[in-house]
Length: 376
Image (cartoon, rainbow, N blue to C red; front, side):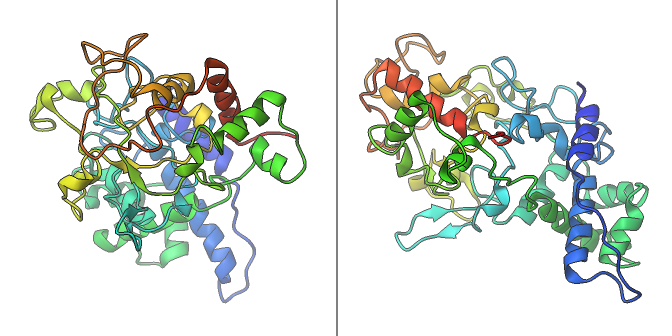
């Protein structure tokens, strides 16, 4: 399935919010919010908003893949942009449940939490929504005006003006802010945060876990120490951590031209440490703890897509500090490569969990109960 077709399919599947009838005074606030979400869904799925045309937000965030990119795998762990042959440095994270992530900031302990992207560089969902349009490695538009010109010519331009006013597309700067507002409204709908996993139905008394899933749940909250960072109901504490993820030698970003990656194969992703509002070596190598909802659908895993399966991820958490270091950056059967960033690593809840092979399987079985769309 092409990216353009996937974008159209997602629009058909998710544009369930329709305008309600209103009186002569215009829609009431609830109706207006519904219209705004519908508009955001149209923008999200519009493959004409890239340069060249062909890539939409929906291209890399597909419902059937847990709102991550279904086209990424071991040979292409990061998404290709609208310009053929251009790749970013990170695996596309899910946008499911993103609207429930708090604004980027610090808590009483001085630890960073929240924000969008895995390094929190976009404080809010609206700020995140703007970035891919102008990123040369993603949708590659040269400026905001080019995006708004395309929306003026789109079939939903009248809906845009219905939501934001008759002159709302006249000023490109203000209109671009409204694009982000509409996208955030769409991403805040139940379609993207449905809470319809088997585990949700289990908590509601409407489903039963298998014996293996129940054992995995007990491990998740106990010996596996998963609940330390992956708190219910979103299965994340929104904090930042460096678990010692190794580099991914198969990441095509290493071969991007110098204007995109001046460091070449020596590139090191410092994560939170590179956040413009942080810029602290004490945060190097830390990435926002992801939600585990729909995690069975969102492979490959980690910020650089280095792990291909949930078994591999759990085994890494289990034996990072037990197995010897690999002689190369490639993952092998009985060793782990060196961490991409060795400082600031979590040594309390990762590295030597003492899980048996059957317990690893039990944990993975439980993680599979977090997939939305379960029918009790």
